[in-house]
Length: 97
Image (cartoon, rainbow, N blue to C red; front, side, top):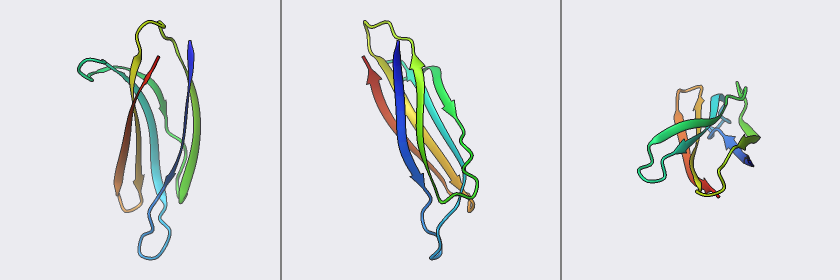
């Protein structure tokens, strides 16, 4: 059993010389097949309330049941949308041994 910590900051870019405001944020961690990167299962989902905030710092933790023999290959996706419907997705791939 392993605990996975995800820490980060999301900000909206300045729009027309004013600070932007976030409308939505999703933080998703999926387990992927280590050979062909296909989806296996969802490990974590969070949808923090960021309505009208210019930025948000997250510190999330979840438990991963591992077999201690082969690494678990994962994908972290952080998706945001602001009030002018600008959509941004950042993706990080990592493995847990």
